Each structure stands twice: as C-alpha cells, then as structure tokens.
Length: 443
Image 1 (cartoon, rainbow, N blue to C red):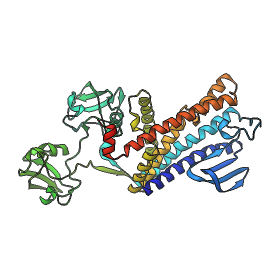
Image 2 (image 1 turned 90 degrees about the vertical axis):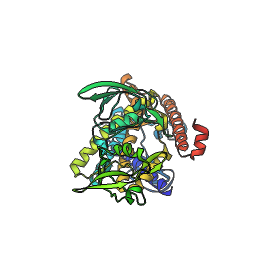
Image 3 (image 1 turned 45 degrees about the vertical axis):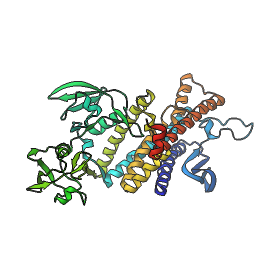
Image 4 (image 1 turned 30 degrees about the vertical axis):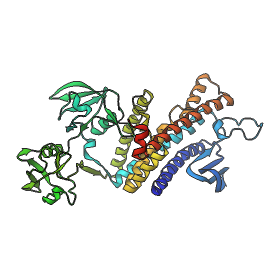
C-alpha cells in the first residue's frame, strides 16, 4: 500500500510538474510574466523569488501549477476587490502557452517510453504478431459464431487490425456490444458478428479468442505431476499418445479426457526426443499435469534511435486507440467501468514499481501521454477548453467578457467533479471484497 501511494505521488507529481513546466517555458519564451511556479498545491512551505517569479514548494505534493497573469480568468486576473481586469495577452500567445503544457506531456511520453525501450521492455511475444486464432474457448461468444482455429482477423468494425494487441483492445472495449469481424480463411474473406461478454468488475469484453501458443513448457512447478514425471522448463511437447501437438491448447484438449489414466508424451529436449509416461491428476473431471499456460515473452532492448522511433510509433498507436475509446465511451459502446481514477492509477503505479524501474518508466510514459491527450479535449477548465474559447474569440474577432468565461469555467469545473465522483466510485467498487461486491453488484 505504502509503495503504491509513494509511486502514485511520484508519477502524478512528476508528470503534472512537467505539464506546468511546458506552460512556464513557453510563457518565458514569449516574454509573458509568470508570477508563481509551484511544485505542489496549497500552503507555501519554501521558495525563492527570481526574475519576478516566486518559485515555491507547497504543502500538497500532487503536481503543481503556474500563475500567468493575462492568460485567463483562472490565473488571478483580478488582483484585488474592485480591481480592473488584468490585460489579456494576445490570443496567439495565450494559445501557444496553453498548447505547450499538453505538448510537453506528449514529448515526455515519447522520452519515457524511449528510455524504457533502451532499458529493455518485456512483452508477450504474441501481441505483436498477426491476429491468427490459435484457440476458441468452448462455450464462449466466439464459439457460437463462424470462427475457426487458423482464421486471420483483418478488421474490427471496418478498422484494420494487424496484430493481436489491436484485436485485444477492440474486444476488451466492446463488452455487451456487437462487433463485426472481417475474417480471412483459405484466401477468402467473410464477416462475422459477435457480442463479447462483459467480465470482471472492470466490464472488460471477453470473446474466447486466444492466440497461438507454442507447446513449450515455460514453468514446471515443483510438486506437480509434470515435475514428478521428469518434465523440465523448455521441453517442447510433440505428441500425446502419438497424436500430434501443434500448440499449447492441444495439451489441454488431449490431456483433459485422461484423468488418472497414464498417457505417453513425446518430448523434444534440446536435440533429443524423449518418451515420458505421466498420469494426469483428476481435477473437476479433467486431467491435469500442473503446467501453467504462460505465453512466451520477449525483451526488446533497443539503441537510442530505434528506441525513440519505437516510442513514437507506440505513442501514435496509443493516441489513436485513446480517441477510439473516448468515442465508444461517448456513444456508450464502452463501459465507464473501464475508466480508472486515482485509486486505480495508484494500484497500477505500485505494481509497475514492484516490477522494476523499466516498467515504472514505461507506465509514466503511458500516463504522460494520456494526460497530454486529456488536457487537449475541448472541456472548459482544461487547456483544450481554453483553446476552444480562443478559437471562438478569433472567429468573432473579440474576446468574451470575464464574466462569460467564468461561467463557462464553472460548468467545466462541475463536470470534472462529476467525472471524478464516477471514477472514484468505480475505483472503490473494484477493490471491494468479493462477498460485498457480489451482494451489491452481482446478479
């Protein structure tokens, strides 16, 4: 818990300060005054003044802020009761200063993810491979439609998909909503409509489609039937009772019917082919040898140029996915349950920190990208909302009054408070004990 809280403070604090540093840097570059650059919020704890700016550390260590007179009504344009409005900066300067914060976050995202690639990013190997169906879970939504092992998914709802990662995102965000898959089989294409089932407290979509996984034993737990029979990590299962095994799911299919019955495995270990007799243990009327299905992973460790090229491509892909998910949220095709708030981010931050510095840095890049995108949305009180107001002002060639802007910002403020209430509720529901969750929300 303490690690999660600390990691959350570090991630959010660093990324918000980076965001505000973007505003600050652009304001300085354009010659605009900056009254305050604060790391943290609330009461001033310590600081110094230089060049007309009060650099301070404040009590609450979650991010920070800059105060730029002339930027808008949220930047203390009224300096005393009855005082006249501070003269606004030219619209083009305001636009550049506002834009600099989100852009800095996006640039930082590329930097963080690039550094993670240089350190080494471990990912399941199949996620970057073409979305060829390796297995279909019995009784799943995919098992009820015209899909077969070996089919290649080429598009979802008309959007091309070239790797499993893209297909997974499309399915996960489509719970209880029909998706149309374009499938290639034996050189011919046809369309299949399917409704992914909503699963878990997050409302994720589940289809039952699984990628091909080589029949290689990644782990052989001590005390398992497989370990007792002499099987070792790295062994490739070639056949079971002389029936060929092409992928890991064949192990499940061929072993399950033989609970408490001896079977013979043909195993490739290095360059040697072995014959191993094993008696699967009966569990819930199915035979099992105690070997977990773990998809092979790969570690990508790249040089600087390749790392930042890959990071740029990842950020471009994730940006497209983010706007797609936002569109699905607005059309209610994706559940709001999938949106995480501070508690969810803290949990993931802690998990990333426990996984290693490379995972934490990669996660910081992901959150920095989302922070930049979110702030560009045309929501009042966010940078994108201010930019939208400036666009309208430029179109009518005059500024709105301070009173009108304040009312617009109030609407945005209350909308954000409502959103925070919803995501906090989601976060709390996700961490409830199973019994309490089932009593209130299941069934």
